[in-house]
Every structure is written in structure tokens, then in C-alpha cells.
Picture 1 (cartoon, one colour):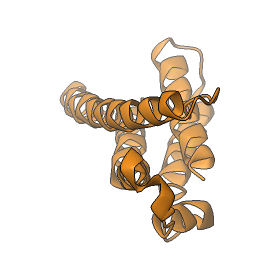
Picture 2: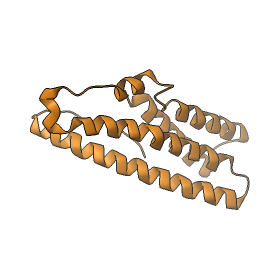
Picture 3: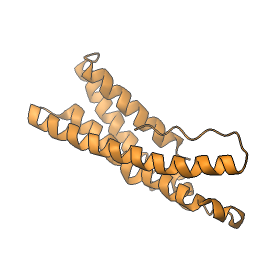
Length: 145
């Protein structure tokens, strides 16, 4: 359910890295800004059925002891507002016209990425513990940040 949002974050960060490396034209930068803004909207439960479904997911009682409610809440929070903010900040970095505006946008982006990483780490900790306790061989979701 979180996959399309995660893909948008990944694509936004790759586009930003490409622009910062000087591998893009002005049209590519404009497109990257648009893609980051679209990706941000795609992380909102109001605009994404899968995230809305995740938000309303009820963990079965039999799994209560594994604290999976925290995973569901953590994944939704990773998407909205954290991934939304990160992608909007990518767009602001790309759109910045002055060194001061760029520095401010980059600082905000770094804060947003730190929040994404912290949220992902919290979710991963719970999921990894549950996977191990259940003796499963499952991969954690790939959440960029």
C-alpha cells in the first residue's frame, strides 16, 4: 500500500541528484519539480486509495502482541506528512532561484529526510522483530529517505 508513495520519493530524490550533478536541462528541472509535487500529492491518504486503505487497516487480534498497529500508524505517518514534506522540499530546492532560497530549501529537505529515516527505522524495528518472532522470511518495505 505504501509502494507508490515510496516510488515517488525515490524518483524525486534521484531527479534532485541528477539536477545537482548538472545532468539536466531547464525542461528536465521543470519536469522534476512537477514530478516531485505530483509524488507528494500521491502520498496523501485523500489522493491514494492504497494509503487510505492502509490507514483504515485493522490488525487482527491474534497479532496484537506484535505491536503491528504501530507499524500501520508508522507507515501512514511516513507517507503523510513526512514523504509529502520531503517531496515538496525537493520541489523547492529545484525551484530555488537564489543561493539563500536554495540553502533554506536544502536545510528543510534535510530535516524532512531525517524525519523519514527516523520513521522508517521505527517501523523497520517492529517489523523485523515480528518477522523474526514468526519465523518468516520476508523483506522489509523499501522506504527511501
